[in-house]
Length: 137
Ligand code: SF4
Ligand code: SF4
Image 1 (cartoon, rainbow, N blue to C red):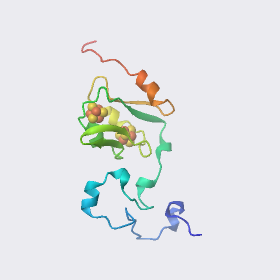
Image 2 (tube, rainbow, N blue to C red):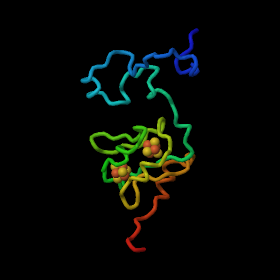
Image 3 (tube, protein in one colour):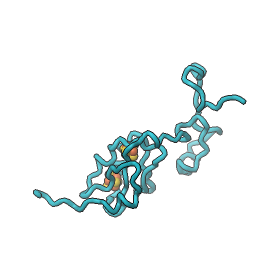
Image 4 (spheres, rainbow, N blue to C red):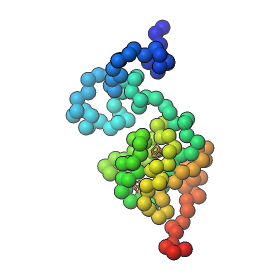
């Protein structure tokens, strides 16, 4: 049985090989009408690789305080903030690396993305959400 591309070592890859994002030819219209999670990715696409186990802290999203400014979506270096029609839906935990940039750039008071221990359930994190801090206090 031949090895899957994901099982190959760096020294087994063919030099100069092209790694296509999709199995089939994808036209721009399909890309513009199909949400990322519904596209037919090729086995070599990084979307198929689960890398969430790199994290030891994770961003938790609180929709109650979010103003949908999109800062987190713009600054996430890993496209791991999910936004639909300019409304934040949450975090793609299969790809988020836990870098904390999204929480850092969130402008609300209290923040709408806060980093918590990876093993704390999100429901518990939401119960620990800080209150709004007052200016000058
Ligand atoms: S922690 Fe980093 S990788 Fe994860 S969603 Fe935030 S900015 Fe993106
Ligand atoms: S940066 Fe904060 S307020 Fe802005 S969209 Fe992201 S979570 Fe919402």
